[in-house]
Length: 157
Image 1 (cartoon, rainbow, N blue to C red):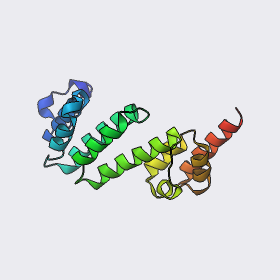
Image 2 (cartoon, rainbow, N blue to C red):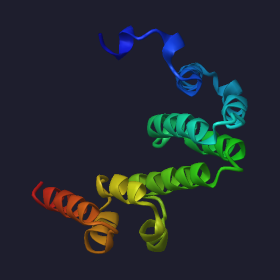
Image 3 (cartoon, helix red, strand yellow):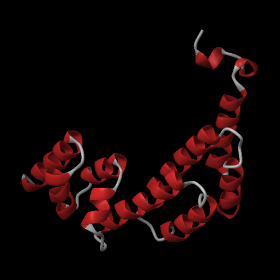
Image 4 (spheres, rainbow, N blue to C red):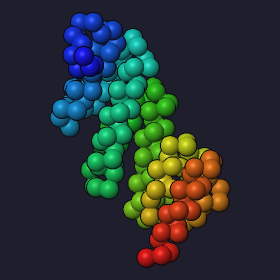
């Protein structure tokens, strides 16, 4: 018997809500997304709710970050997550990653002050200036090594 064979009624309530939130967020229309994200964030289990929204933000931002729809989407999500600093920071870091990836203006200090997650994502990009910065000043050894590896691969092309 695997996890898929366990009846849903035996699962803790927060697990069921988490799954339902992910399902709803995965199917929500653009017009209803802000309201649904706001509603999920009112759940009494704040950690679970933020985790569901974080997964949604990461999925949607990855899909949208190189397109023109990103800015308006990010603004709506900032409004929905305004009372949740971790989530608004993640949106800010997606915007930074977007700027780096698209070759738009960005600040070295913002990248160096960003989370390990953002630095690692950026170290996987193709922006030479960002890779050089992270190869020497990235927060962790993994970030520095990933940036160096990507720089070396770019120079071999």
